[in-house]
Image 1: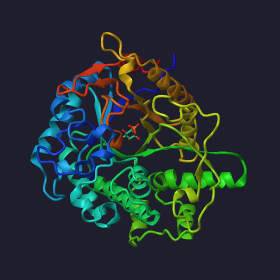
Image 2: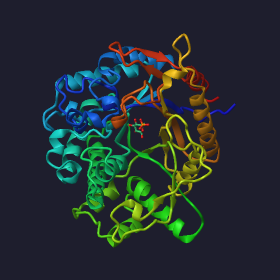
Image 3: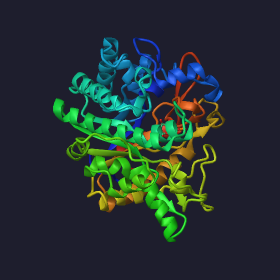
Image 4: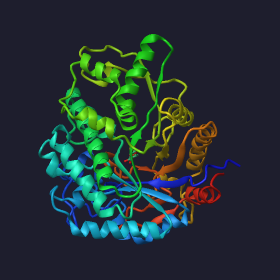
Length: 457
Ligand code: BG6
């Protein structure tokens, strides 16, 4: 039996834009996702947009009972910025009523809510002013954060500012998967810098408002593994770690952007515009904990045909197709559970044993209806095996002293996922794409209940 530390958080995560539905109702204004879907529905898997998602807006009361049913002791979702502040300035009272009641129901179910502020959902009113490209976004986000802390700080003890900030930077400004889908490395760096400062000033607002509890940030960790020990491959690994991981992890925990990153960016003419007081603000506003989302590692090699100055991260490190990799046949991502042990050790040894938790880990499966039995239960043994394998390595890291305080899966109920629509299913509950939004418990939900009740397996 592997018993996890006392008060270990066992839970699942989702986000407002992926679960609430009512995307243009009840006072919510449009985000880039609503706008993009209205204008280019063909970009989305089977033309599936964000209007309904899993309809938690209407179903949260019964869904909180479902959290209980599978033994969750914690649950992460986010607030929708465009719902709370439809024009960036004025509070939508309907949103306040909704979120307060939703959070109260989560608490009444004996579940600890962890509330995130931004999960890829840029309001259109801000996008029209340049979004994260504009410095205005920093103040706008800090104001939103302060408003949320004031309105919900009495209910919520654990807050996070951003989910996977690297993703909206890469997908929006380098690889085309998020709006505005442009390719411009310099803009991507500026967007990244503003995102970092928005995070920093949100933490500052948290300290000023002084709600109870703690604040963190959620980063997607794709630990980089080099093709070989050769110097050029090792350098590529270092570049990948600097750009995709340390760019947020170091300022958030150590209060400074790594000097090696500052120099790398400078060398390639990518240095962003900054304000003189930013450096001190970064130093003074570190977080209390870190959430790390882990799905798959990043395999890298020395850049193949690099350009100078770099036009793209691939000029600094190039993805490498590791011949020995194990693949999730239902999603195509690599499965490499040992990375969770490596991350645990990294947090212990390189980050002064900073408190952290696994804020997302999960197995996406396309066409999952093929695994449903005659009673409608998805027999997702593959997902149970996936979680067990990852937990085995996490457990080992904890045994060796890493300060990990929880494990959250992605996700609670199957949800809508950006351009992928409802293609990849991850939930403990299957979501039917009908007008009733029927939820059916999967076998993994039953398994997770046992794990959470026994604090291990
Ligand atoms: C995570 C994101 O990285 O991946 C989620 O935080 C997303 O928002 C999840 O839904 C799964 O992605 P996909 O592409 O497999 O549906």
